[in-house]
Amino acid sequence: MVLMVVPMQPLDDFFYFAKVIEHGGYAKASRALSIPKSRLSRHVAALETRLGVRLVNRSTRRFAVTEVGQEVQRHAMAMLAEADAAVDAVEFARAEPCGVVKASCPVALAQTVLAHHLPEFLARYPKIRLMLHATNRRVDVINEGFDVAVRVRTVPSGEDNLVMRTFGSSRSLLIASREYLSERGRPRRPEEISQHATLSFAPETDRQTWELFDAEGISVQIEHTPRLVCHDFPVLRTAVLAGLGIALLPESVVRADVESGKLEQVLPDWTLPLGVFHLVFPTRRGLLPSVRTFIDFLAERMPKLV
Image (cartoon, rainbow, N blue to C red; front, side, top):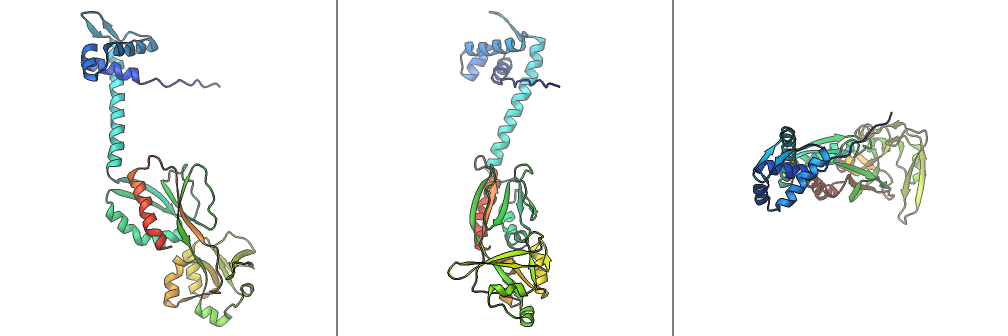
């Protein structure tokens, strides 16, 4: 089956035809639009030729719209009204941050860092509605209609047709409860991790690897078999607090627990790869004020918290 593609009709001729009818003739339309009558006549004649019908009957003393011309005028005026409405909508959206912002954010960041400052953002911009999807799934920003997506990755990967804005780094810690370490012993070297129960956020595999760096930047790969694998930081935090083992968690998730003494950092002289905190969004051009405002707010607040 062959589909016939009908080309879109140029709109200029419809515009000038509608204006000629609206003003009751070429002379009045010419004065109202400040363009020559000959130009208006050419546009109307071109439209008649393209449609294959007579739209107006004109002579030196008479100007009359044909029956089909009246029908074309009705559709042309509706077209112009919709175009004006589209321009008004854009101008209104650009005048003040308002409307819906659809965003995606990892669950842990949404529950800890982002939740702390969202009330301030919404109070500052009362006409913005935020649709926040807290998910650890990597959403398809364009095809799923997201305005912006928050990402934290050790190596940000390029995403076709998306703009990336980097804000800062997120540190992760090897962490365990004091009770667990008192009972099982505190590792002094990375190799000793394999003798402990571990909890992992990584994908489900039998053997997993953590990479640690010493003070000179030399890395050590530590293989371990996690006792619990869960793609959710709050679940892992609860398991660590219960004394089930050692976990690798973002500092933002366990900062309060470390400060209160409930959790203790394991191998504090060793570091782990930093997570790069960044946003991705479809384009820099034509960003609505609501989206731009949300991005700028995150740029201001989030680097201080992750």
